[in-house]
Image 1 (cartoon, rainbow, N blue to C red):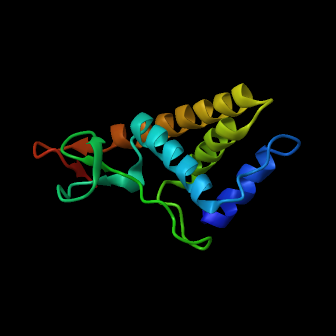
Image 2 (image 1 turned 45 degrees about the horizontal axis):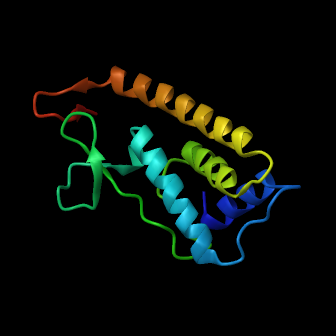
Length: 137
């Protein structure tokens, strides 16, 4: 999902409520908060690395590390998390901005994270974790 599409989704979630901030830096800061939440609650496949020089947020499964997601620079940049999690992140950002439906957006984000984790856990369980801490792809 591009950053532009993310903004459209978040704007749609906020229909009839508070508007997205006009300053893009404010929206990116909120996206950074959502990224942090999502990356801490999920095994984000797009962020898993063995590179110890990466900007690491936390330890992952086996010897994998979870990288800190990079914020987009322009509307055409692809978000660095899996598409399923982009919708959860949009719901989190909407929950930060909303005055009337904070809980609705938070619950949607939590459900998105749960669904993603179930899918990823199924994938990871089907792979064999080797003695060296890597998955046998």
